[in-house]
Length: 364
Image (cartoon, rainbow, N blue to C red; front, side):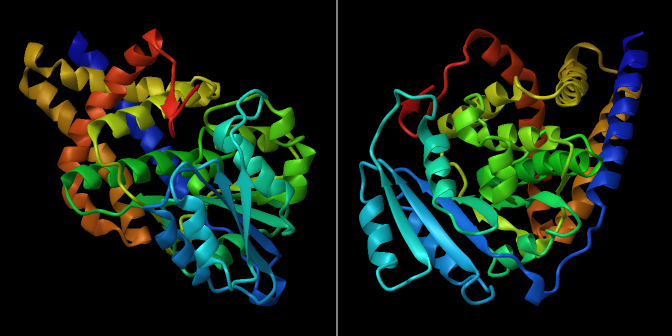
């Protein structure tokens, strides 16, 4: 009986993956160079003295039409030397701007949301691109993302991977691509369930039409909150192209504790997900739960069903890694699979008992 239930679960899991692959494969028209809009890049940084310089160097190498690009760095009350590093780097660069914020957690806008809001309000570009201080962008990143603002497009999302140097960072890298594959598939099929703020863009006027973060409820995953708010307007297109030139590379988390805190923050943010998002999370939970039951329900049929589930994940991951030029990371797929099975099962129980989040030395 349980084998039949497992078969149904993995069969639906496969059909979901096929649908997501079809969504992620969608292509979109793009603007020619002389049609590119003005762009403002917004980067919120808090205690990033170890990371911010490499981020700034990559942003300084961006290829974009002259006088159409500005970069705004918000120092979010850093207690280290983040401000000094940024100030020195941009001292002779007119297209960079530094904004200093002092700590203020009394209002509705807290932490990164407040910093990003300040950056957007001072931006002059028609399109806002956001990334994080621990990220490095492709030299064609801004040009690639901005080129998709055609035919009433209001939000363009990009892919982020992890700088891989061992199995621990390798499994994080594959996990990022898998989660963003789900985001791309659902967004391109017209039903957004998630996105990531370290490679996100949106029209400044569209942002203002939502009322901005000052008029939206607080969320620890402010990027998806904004995406949902724009999608609800039902007036603009939201897309997620799979484009290697729009790739952003982030630094891996160094410890299990850091990884746990990141996953918990995303899981708590996922409580505000749409019904579709919750169904997708449930189906991943169910498929991985049955694999964890293997020691108690072992049989050859059971092993075939496990193989079917694992093969389905490979079916989804291989083509998207190839298109992004990241196929070498797939050697860590076995480690990712173990990690994926464990965290999709454990996280729901963790947030059931505690929704407190600690992030960047702040508690939410």
